[in-house]
Length: 100
Image (cartoon, rainbow, N blue to C red; front, top):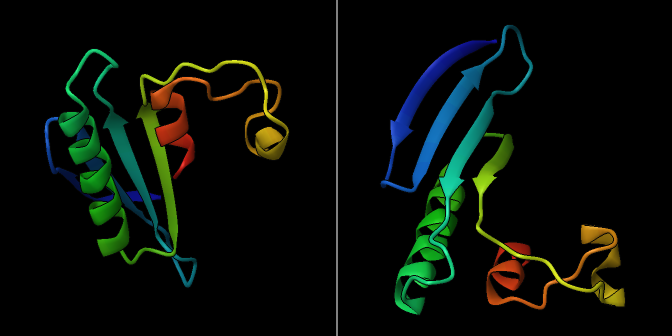
């Protein structure tokens, strides 16, 4: 794999594109750092809206989001068991990160 491009969209969202040889599709990695829970709700919402927009605008076949979502987990809830294992989402930041 070779680096195709790297971009910083905001102070909290960046993108690294990797190209592969031959007919194998490329890979895009979004690197994120979400606002902590002590930030205004509007700023947290703006972060997730920006991330969704950048994610949808990228037409790479393989996309990965990694980073620090500042999410705290709580006790497990049965409907979310497949996604988060033995942890739950009793905090807002945990619920927002899972809505992705």
